[in-house]
Image (cartoon, rainbow, N blue to C red; front, side, top):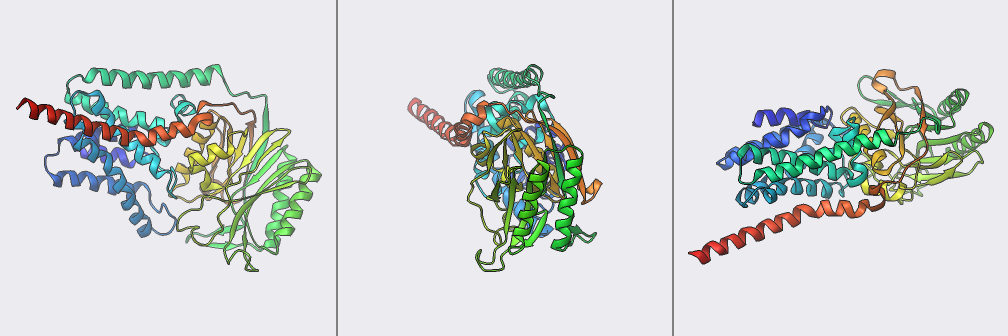
Length: 478
């Protein structure tokens, strides 16, 4: 069971993902955990989780394998806690229903707490189901933590059924009924409320070669004059094929802050002359000391009337951008246009579920210019699809050194390409549905997430209370 759990764990999320494996490893690991008799055997479970983390998240920080491995080992410690909670509480509780909830509630609390840290929600269990549209739709009601809870609960119920614990059938019945209802809801939502193919907007996602990547993994900057010429040529190329919005990847250009007005003027002029909306991601270096020597990772949203809205990346990547970059204020541009309301964040911002829900909930299309790397590129694009379903809008994500995608509000991928296949000079066109829809999660997701965050603590406290009550009863009987 330990071997089965380990194999399934490595292929659930991370660099690789086979969705069905996410339903296997919680069962296998939990079964092993419940049937170990000595501490040394339980330590084997901890070792399997730690090794699995290191294998499936290689170079997660893009700062070398040793540092990333150390981070994964620290991260895996949190994943041991739900198994400890189950071992200390669930197996001692009478009946099956309450005991089956301890494991999933503790796990989802750990997920929700970790999502509040600088690492965000990357690696959440729900993201393993990317591409399974019927099940993804339930996140429009209960969010990604709700889907994670259902997956973990299935594993706990399966173990309870395998052990044939007293009154295991009601727990299994409720769990399976909720899963079936979730899939049915998703099928109905996709079939009865399809995404319209009429009200669409042609969008161009541009991955530019401002940084040229060499085979040894190093980068060389292209001179700013050349990058400006490239900017204009690619914008013209997009305009000629009917694009109404053109979005560049994160840090598509790197400039000294003294050169920024040149790019700004070129963007405004082009937008006016071509009636196009431009979203340009770039980085400025501090040459006058106004930013205490830190770089600024930003984007500008330029409308055809020449108005410009600026956004500075708010959620910076630990070790990669902290320290060294200015942290944004969190004010996300949400701009009403003839095509609908569009919003713009940058890359790592979209791993923060609450931030995206609170700052972009009124949008029809969310643009996420990004820069990824091999260890996280698939996982990062997969989680972007869940932001689309949760909030009821389309997501457009051009990514340098990663997977670019245009995704509709039901999580369906409209267009997708990987720079590993097409190179670092590519333009992707997609006809993106521009009419968003309200979702339950977008409206009350904060309360829903709080419930899941607290669920592990509440059930653990309830479990302790039940054990103490039973102990007192036994003592009184004696």
